[in-house]
Image 1 (cartoon, helix red, strand yellow):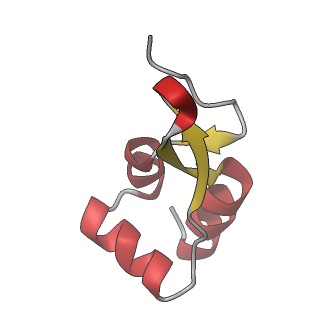
Image 2 (cartoon, one colour):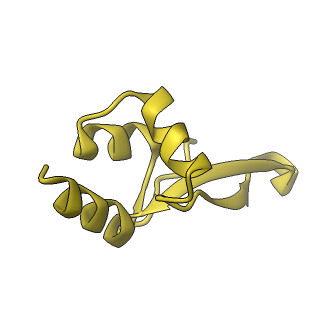
Image 3 (tube, helix red, strand yellow):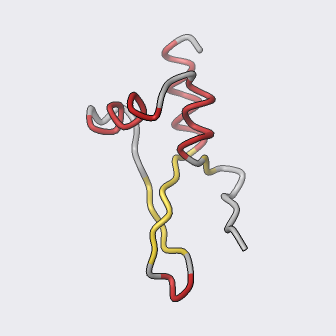
Length: 67
């Protein structure tokens, strides 16, 4: 069963949709420290990592960019 993000967390896909950008641009924003990538363990044995973004940070960035 796929773990669902909490309401205050966005997947990469959700963040790109909200910002109206590509995944490549999303990771460029992370590299330029304009957006923070968070991780948490998931999966069988919790050996995997799930990347997520805080909704508040993504919305603030979208607002500053005029989206």
